[in-house]
Image (tube, rainbow, N blue to C red; front, side, top):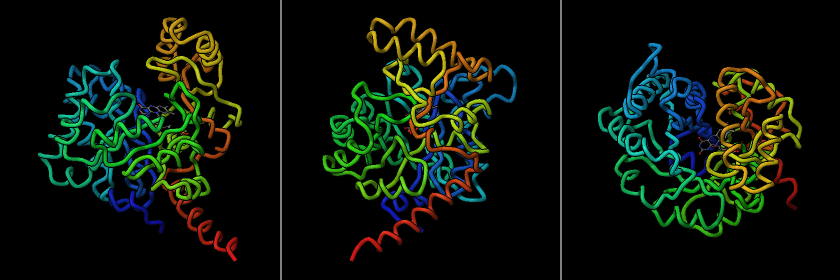
Length: 350
Ligand SMILES: Cc1cc2nc3c(=O)[nH]c(=O)nc-3n(C[C@H](O)[C@H](O)[C@H](O)COP(=O)(O)O)c2cc1C
């Protein structure tokens, strides 16, 4: 068993976080991950869409507010993780583009915890990302959870610490989904963030197995957050087409391209190569066409249609992923491999 500050803070068995991955649902992933002893995360980007929050849409048309939807998703997650006493959290990106429902999402998290003791014990963390954390300090603190913030640079990590975050997730540019304009990758970013802040740091971008977990610990992290690796699991909410694309990609299989609030890393196909070309021309210049292509591509990916023009966010680590385990198998194999490696490493020391 590997014990770190992260397992201690959250009361989880493995120092592993399943990343928020909106605007797609991570409801099933969150449940499977929490039940397996790591931290499961509910995604909230686009929570008004049926595909993002399926448990709040028993009927075809649900005219509900983001507050109501998140409350229902959290309650469904609580029930499905009750037997294992699984630990979970919520990802709330703070980008201006998502501003409208943010207050409701923080309130929903707060009220869910206030009204139910079991929820309060197991809904342990809010992970904010993609925006300035400073104006949100009071609302996050009011929810009563721990607060982790995703930062792609030392500057942003220090800002999160100053705003009151309990930990920072240093997110390298090889990661899937939104990435910084500046190409600073995990190997350099993570230890530099560790040196620059006083709060604990978690690594994100490029992690998939026990070896990379050990590397993160060696660089000073208390654990890892993984997105792409969790897509290719049996229980993941993503389409079979997407899972196979992760497995089929090699290490050159991704590209950063234009996305709604900055560049994002995509698995390569026709639409992402076009988004990359637009990004090279200039973010402002390519923005309108880029966002139109992305919006259409997100719908196609939901429907499992047209692999050439579907949006598939994904990280470089797809090149290291070649199987489709259950979440439990994945998390256990990472823990076992990391333990073994840490013990073997003693052999290097005379
Ligand atoms: C499909 C997909 C969707 C994502 N959406 C979000 C999101 O809604 N919020 C967020 O903070 N990060 C998002 N990310 C980034 C992940 O949370 C995570 O930091 C990243 O995947 C880590 O890098 P990795 O893919 O190499 O594991 C997304 C990533 C992917 C692959």
